[in-house]
Amino acid sequence: MNGTSLANNNHCPQFYYDNSCYYSYVLVNGCRETLREVIKHLQLNQIMCRLTGKSHKKASDGNQYQWYIRVSDNQQSSSQRPPAQKVNSVLKQLTVGWEHQRSSQNKLVSIESSVLTKQLLEADKEINYHKLIINQQKKQLSCLKRELSDSIAQNRKLINQKDEIEYSSLKDLELLEDENLDLQHQTENHAAQLNNEKFIRENLESKISELERQLETERLSFDTNGSNVVVFDRIKHLVPTLQLVRGSDKLLFSYEVKEPGKVLSVLYKLEVGQKPESKRVQTADSWWEISQKINLGDKGARGRIYYRQSRHPQFKYDVIVSYKKFQQRDIKWMRRN
Image (tube, rainbow, N blue to C red; front, side):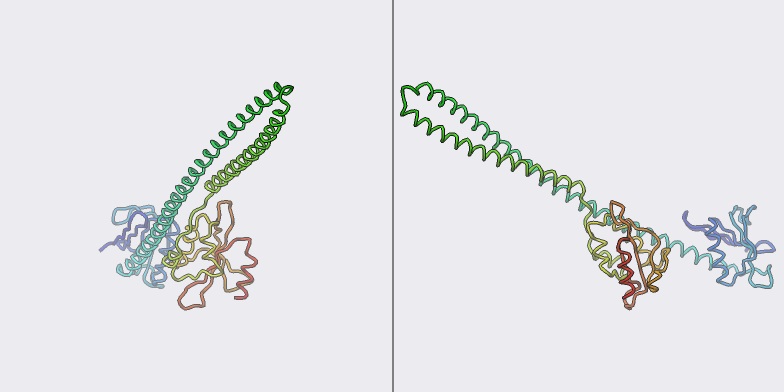
């Protein structure tokens, strides 16, 4: 057998072990990072990597590969071929590892999609609820406006009646002095009634103004309403070996955090063993700070994520999710605990 090939799906590299010449070669399709990963795993399995570089000619299978790695089975002889079964076993382990990593990423994307879908459904319910309230308040406002219109018409009628009475009183003043006293009393009564109607009108105008303010408040509340809190059980299902401490679960699912799915995606990497880039907290040696900066709100509130090896046997890590502005207080807590 002159050589064996190992191919994956479109997202993974393709390998070929060519032992048809004097020297044996592992041929690779992929980026430089892929090449370095292949060399690392070959050397860990006692397969010597003598020389590597870009491949400029076709392999014995008729295909052109991007990289070559000249390999041997021991340190002394550069021409002694490693067994094909041993080389293919290493390459297969690499392929399976990449497939597992891709499967984990797909699972994370699926979880984030589910969270976002639930948030959209809850947001639709909230929108419909606020629309119902606004419609009800519009009806109330319409009724109050009608009442105000009726009150104004009645006031105008009373004013007209007062004018007629005063005109009649002046006309008969010289002849009916006694009736003039009665008319004066009627005028005073009408004046008191007008004052009462004025009070009622001002009260109605005040109510209308208050309702208009409430409508504007509801509109602003509706326009700026954030996403709803997802059920806490989802954290336990997604990251069962992480313990959220220092109130991190309440912060993560508070109304201020608009996109908790982004924080969960970072925590999930810790859960599956994909440690993100981190730096040690200098004054709290057992704690690490994840380098990736997290946006915890729609106004650009900066967040931080810290973790350490958990002291509890049922958990892998203790995790703190917090704001940048609380960093000094968080570090003091880390030193004490």
